Image 1 (cartoon, one colour):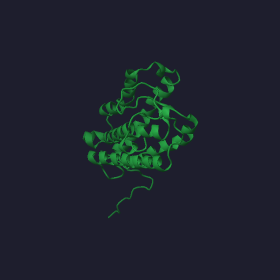
Image 2 (tube, one colour):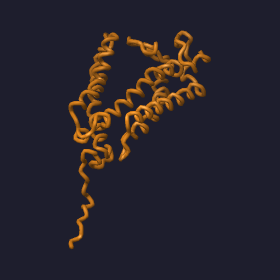
Image 3 (tube, one colour):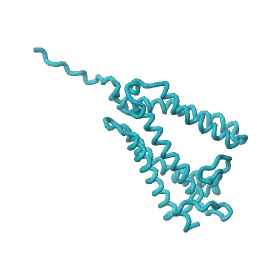
Image 4 (cartoon, helix red, strand yellow):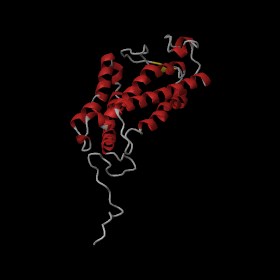
Length: 233
C-alpha cells in the first residue's frame, strides 16, 4: 500500500470561510481579520489625502464652520462602515455581521475614541497647555485648539499623546488573533479596559510630572473638569 503523501514543505494552506488562510508576517492568519486589515490599510490613504493633502495645504479649514467639520468627520469615517457591507470578503461571506472582524474593529475604535475625545481632552488643558481654535459642536464643553508652547508640545507632548497608542495598539491587535474569536461584548469590555488604563497613566503623569509648560492663569481651562481635577483647579 502506498504511503500517504505529505505536503511539500513550501506548500501553503488555502484560506477557507473560517480563514486560516495564508500566513503573512504583516497580515493576520484569520481570513476575516486579514481582509479587514487589508481594507483599512487601503482606505486610510483616502482620509489622509483628504485632510493632509487637500484641506490643510489649501487652508480650507479657515472657512470651516461647525457643519463643515461635522461633514468632514462623517466623510472620513462612514465609508469604513458602509464599504465592507457591500464589498464582502470571501471569509466574511459565510459569517454573520457580528462575527466579522471589521465590525469588531470599528466598535473597539468607536468606544476608545469616544472616551478619548470626551475625557482625555481635559489633559490637553491641564498638562499640555492646549486650547481649541476651531469651531465645533460641543460634547464635553471644550470647543477649540492651540498651544502655550508649540515646540515643547511637539517634543514632549507627543510622548504624552503616544501613551494612547502604546496602550491601545497591543490590546487592539489581540482581536480575533489566531483561533480565538471574540464576541462583541468582549470587544466592548476590552476597549473600555484599554481606555481606563490610558486614563490611569495620563492622570499619573498629571499628578507626578505635572504640566509640560507653565500655564498662565488666563489660559487655564475655565471648566471645572473631571472629579479628580477639581482639587487642583
